[in-house]
Length: 219
Image (tube, rainbow, N blue to C red):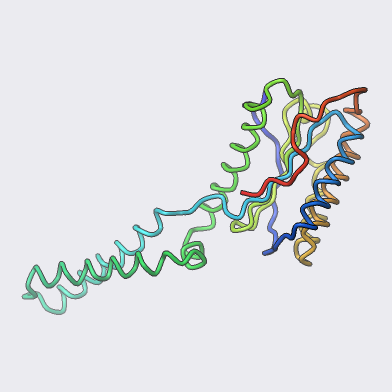
């Protein structure tokens, strides 16, 4: 069930930070929300969905290649060893500069970042079912800060009764709170709103176990 198709919504969010007090608020909100519904809620905040290490090699290699071509065009008689050493120096310098994560991230194409966040969210969602295979249904609220993306994912059982459009107002509220730097409010409001939507269709069951930790997962 947890390895089947997931339904989600993606938007842009702003840069943010979290405190211990904010984490405690979020965990308390998840615990309260889960008293209303049998669906488990999992909240995840990823600082980045990938290290994009390939960028450290691709751009310096292109720089060295282009620079070598220009140098050869300017001086066709340049000694091969000199040309090689110059290209190697440029390559190593580029690799060193791209150790700075903000610059490396800025050079990653948007489509690659979207794909990384998309994949990261679904891998984490699948891990819920792999670690707790007896869980019937779960909703994941996943935010990837570096890629400025947030998604709400639900399994097929939920998708059959609740269309993807029901999550859109929650996503928009999440987006607005993040834009104002209200990180805890974004997660707290989203948890409560998801539970309010789920409760009429998947009400809480007497004596239900809490199989997924309420704490915000930070990656």
